[in-house]
Amino acid sequence: MKRLPHDCGILCRVAITLAEFVKNAYGQVLTLSPSEVAKAAQISPYVVGQIFRKLAEVGYMECRRENKRLCCFLTRNSPLWTADSQRINQILEALAE
Picture (cartoon, rainbow, N blue to C red):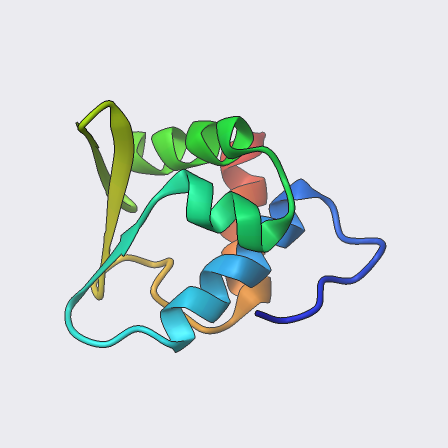
């Protein structure tokens, strides 16, 4: 994973981390758990879970519970499927408003 900038907030960290996961993805669907993204972004899994739930509400990803854990799926037709962390950050900030 990339080293995260010191002045990078929560949404910035999630954006950089998601961009990195997408960059390394193969196939049509990327499976993500809030805990793995949270670990890479160095933030709380609860916060990432809330962000993922919001992204699922607007249709940018699909999330469901599997064995008491949240599992989310990002498809290639999602606007988040980009290795451009700035674009992902813009999407996240727009949802936070």
